[in-house]
Image (tube, rainbow, N blue to C red; front, side, top):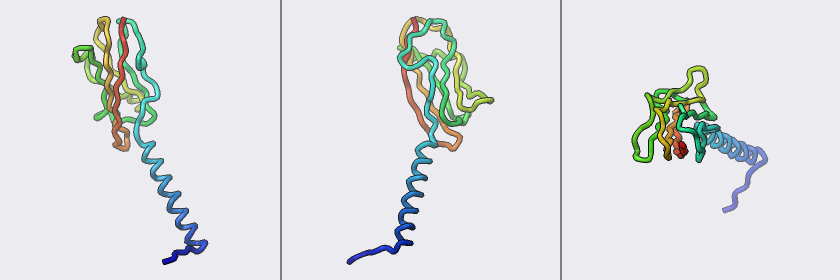
Length: 127
C-alpha cells in the first residue's frame, strides 16, 4: 500500500514534528541544574569555611529543595536547614558548623518551580 502526502499534509507532519521537538526541549530545560557551587566539587578549603552555596539555572521550590553536608563518617556538619534566598530563588545555601580537616560530602536536591526534581552530590576537602 502506497502512502502519499500533499504539500499541506507534509507541512502538517513537519509542523507536528517541530512542535514535539520544541515541547521535548522545553521539558528537558525545565529541571534546575547547578551553575556554580561554593566550595566547588573537588575543592580544598580552609577549615573556617562557613557555608555551602549552590546557584541553579532555574528557580527552586524552597519547601522541597535542600543541601546536606556530611563528614567522612556520615555525620551532618550543617547548622540548621538549607535555605533558598527569597530575593533570588536560584540560590540555595546552608550554614556549616566548624569543620575539622577531612573530606566532606555535599548532597543536593533541587525541585524546580515547575516541580521537576534533580539531585546530585560532590565532595570537597577541608585542610
